[in-house]
Length: 110
Image (cartoon, rainbow, N blue to C red):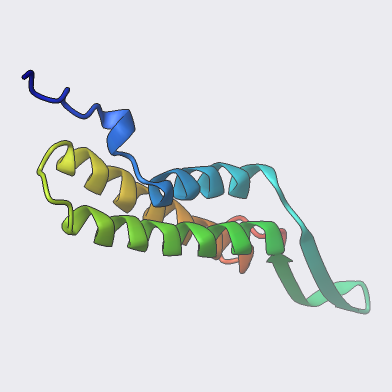
């Protein structure tokens, strides 16, 4: 009998990896922004910005990246483990950027 074919990197990606990548891309594309400004005598004294699209996409990305990391740790084989860890960590980092964008910490309109 012949040995089974080796797993390719595309086959090694889990659903969590793919969900995290999709959430990371959608966080840059979808934006539902709420903003409030308080103006006194023509001067902005308070400004709050919230992007729900980035906030939700970032949260999904962080959760998916964390789950992908856990799945990668418990893989029975070491095939493509470094790549899977790299994708999971990248998904988590992009998710953190989206959460910061969603809260107006990075790139807010205020």
